[in-house]
Length: 31
Image 1 (cartoon, rainbow, N blue to C red):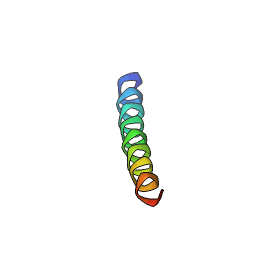
Image 2 (cartoon, rainbow, N blue to C red; image 1 turned 135 degrees about the horizontal axis):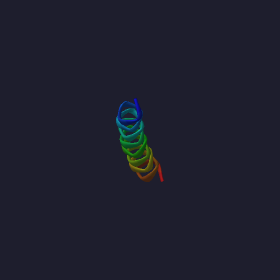
Image 3 (cartoon, rainbow, N blue to C red; image 1 turned 45 degrees about the horizontal axis):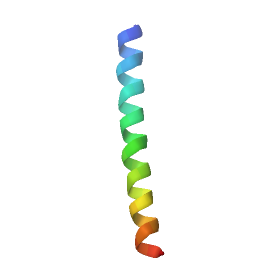
């Protein structure tokens, strides 16, 4: 159960990092 939670957490974290990078790239294009 703990490992499943960790996998889900890591997956969510990776998605969050990717989304953050895309947002920063988007903001750089605007400014």
